Image (cartoon, rainbow, N blue to C red; front, side, top):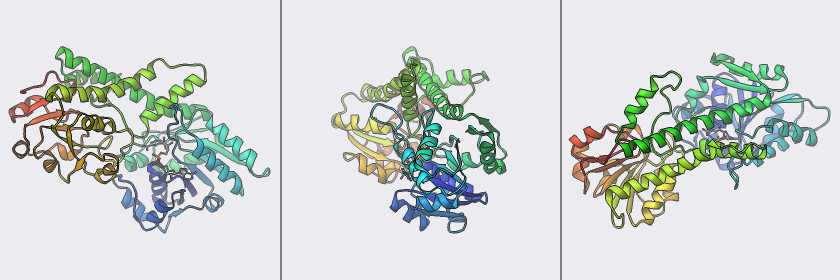
Length: 434
Ligand code: NAD
């Protein structure tokens, strides 16, 4: 099939290259000239496991890169829109990029096309795209607008794209949805066909539900700290109930990334604009913000005044296996530590370079051990695999004081105490061994 994917970011690039891998002819379009130039040379601008390989395998054969939207539209039968929809000032989804692409499609459309919205957009956006193309495009050209929300997770995006748990396709005309379903057929996954608005709502409802689950667990974990219960044992006990399940029950520093915070805010905004002010979702966001402040308070409680203290931060990205720093807890936590007068040293396996641009007061190192040299405490902010197997004896020797403040519950409190560390996690009771 001939496919154009407009927007070559985390979603667009993974979608485009995986569709090419399935044998389709795909043109990825972006307004970012540098990104397109790099991709033409085989330089993949994001860190996503397995992606570079898929891009290299298909580049110049079935996978092309361009800034020329008109040509890509004219040569494609299917046009996926995968541009960013960042949060606006009031938390609403900023849909200006999607509208710009719709106008671009209208100008160059030269025959029947299926336009598929993969960007996360407010409910009703499918109709807006239809209107824009009708108003700005030629009268005699027919098209369908379809919603196909994306559920991939950064860090496992390639696998999620080729082994999706479900594909949702919303359309006014079922025949258009069925044609889009053909693209996914080789993946042998459940495909749900709905109306346009329901598909758009499924994406928001799913992300808001998952974010709610995280905030709920974080609230329980904060109470665990106060009453002396252990959140790990509590969530394990909860997870045997199949109605609850065992996913997304990790207490920690809250959700981040480019999706959950912005999509929950956008859903709150959609609710307000449609006369349904959500009660639960503003609290989900508030709890998430509080969780980062609670962690800073924990650091202060353990170490006392932070002025002059040396803190080694392990992990900066919003979750492991990604270089994405958008809405990462580190963005809130590090400025607090620096403002309190702490000397902050940091290490992240992949985001050091990006992070240097953001955290001007922080010193960066190329290994977790070097970061910990002379530190009053190690602060774990992202649960990267390489922090699992640590040589704790070596770490202890390097640190000024062996203190671990584990924002991701990577370690077992008693084991850390046995290794001679003062330890505190999230929702795991009192600070041990201090
Ligand atoms: P991103 O910021 O990584 O990439 C977006 C790309 O779109 C950028 O390269 C940008 O230059 C390009 N772009 C912006 N305006 C353009 C235009 N007018 N024409 C052509 N290109 C344009 O964003 P992303 O993370 O890939 O997210 C894209 C959409 O998918 C968003 O709506 C997001 O909410 C949704 N989504 C993201 C994820 C995720 O994990 N990142 C998962 C599911 C859904």
